[in-house]
Image 1 (tube, rainbow, N blue to C red):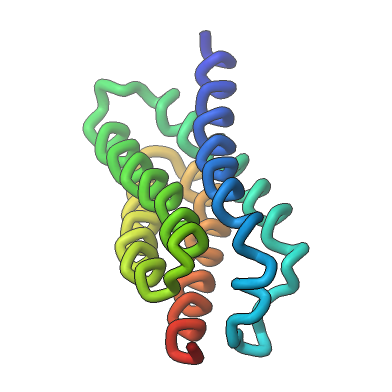
Image 2 (cartoon, helix red, strand yellow):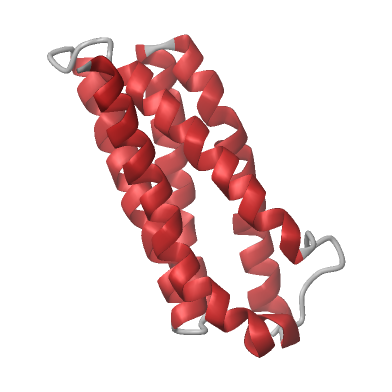
Length: 155
């Protein structure tokens, strides 16, 4: 049962990424490519492998927290924050790319970043390794927030 839970977390997290790609891929050409972006924007080929690694680390982190016992308050808090950030994460691509609206994307990514910070903090309380696994996602989310804001400003 333990490993089945890990598979479920991996499926849910990678599924959130798959939802995003459904909206992202068709909007790359020509819409996203033609947007004014800062010179420090990563090349397009960076995003898929980075996000895949982040989703796997998120899943492992959530699984480690769950394994501490769902009856524990800190586990419950951590997983609520995790669910909130995952929902907002899954919503960002349909909004930014699907609606082709960097402004609406910014409106989503601000609470997303707050939820990632909350989840990361609570994960550290529940399980140190889970918190460490969330740190790259926290950093990347902050970078994505700044990039989204720069795109809004430049367009």
